[in-house]
Length: 95
Image 1 (tube, rainbow, N blue to C red):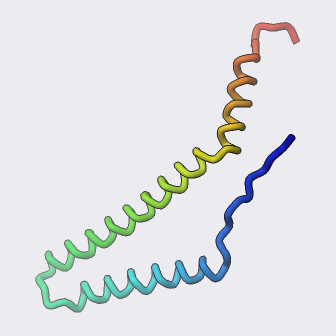
Image 2 (cartoon, helix red, strand yellow):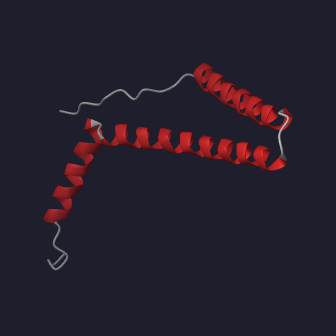
């Protein structure tokens, strides 16, 4: 009895929309930081904060995705099978 859970896949349109939204928002933030009337050190701070925010968003998305994958039934069943195989394996047994 093999039950498979359907894998949710994003559509090409949603992927393209996400990429465009990310590019437009990042570009607008960088352009805005360079055109604000500020001292160079303040502008540098905004740019570094922007880069930190972007990398934090990517890391958060990855952690959430990994946690969801780890909680899926398929992964837990695979882990149980692997644990059983490791428990039954005896490297000193004659082949």
